Length: 120
Image 1: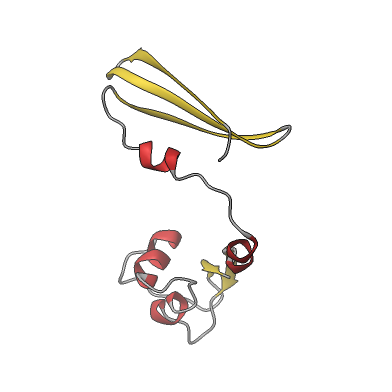
Image 2 (image 1 turned 60 degrees about the horizontal axis):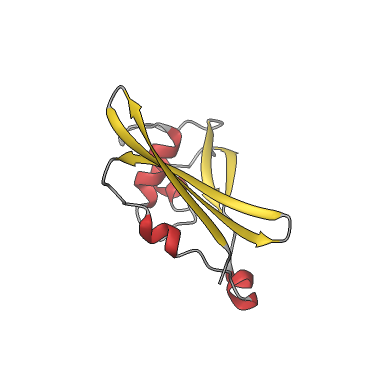
């Protein structure tokens, strides 16, 4: 178990009453992490997130591959499809590439154009 502290307060906003919740977890002596959420009164969409906090074992931690945001220069033969194929995702690669770069689906990629891709 991870020692945790929970508190909430109801606040009045221009949009009506909201609930501010703070969950703090003591990860180690002198080290704590916290979540702060704001929701409509009586809504608890984050309860599952709060209760799912757990430590990773060594094997789980070793299996994590961090994602990196890279800025690349498009080559003369690059297309949306070829660049999206470089993305470190197994689904929605094209959609993610277009959203990341603020491009419409019919965009023309120019050689030398600076674009972002997410890789491992």
